[in-house]
Amino acid sequence: MFRVSPRSVYYVIIRNYMSFRSLFKISIVPNLIDPLFYLIAMGFGVGAYLTNINGMSYTTFVITGLIGATAMTTATSEATVNAFIQYKIEKTYAAMLMTPINLQDIVIGQAIWSGVRAIIFWGIFWLVSLVISQTYNLYMLFIIPLLF
Image (cartoon, rainbow, N blue to C red; front, top):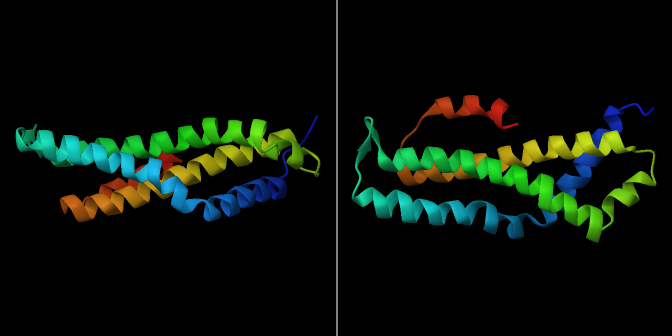
C-alpha cells in the first residue's frame, strides 16, 4: 500500500504549473475567448431584447452563468482531455512513475491542479466581466473555495 507524500504531490503540481506557464497563450483561446463569444452573442445580442430577469439585468445574469461555466469547463478539460494527452501521447504519467512519485500522488496532484486552473481562468474571466459589465459584486470571491 502506498502512502501519499505531500512533497510528491507538490512536485506534480509544480510540473503542471511549469507546463501551463509555457502553454498559457494557447490555453487562453478555448478557455477565455469562447465565453467571450457567448457573452457577445447572448449577453449583448439577446440582451438587446431582454432587459431584466427578476430585477437583475440580463447581461449580469448571463455573465454570472458564464463565469461558473468557464471554471467548470476549464477544470473538466484539464481533468479529461489534458490528462488523456499526458497519459497516452506524452507518456508523462509513465515518466512520473519512474520516480519516487506513486499513483496516488499523481491523482491528488492532478486534482489539485485542475482546481487551481479553474480558479485561474475564473479570475481572468471575472476581471474581464468587471470591465465589460461594470457590475462589481465582491460576493463572487466567496465562490473560490467551491470552485476548487
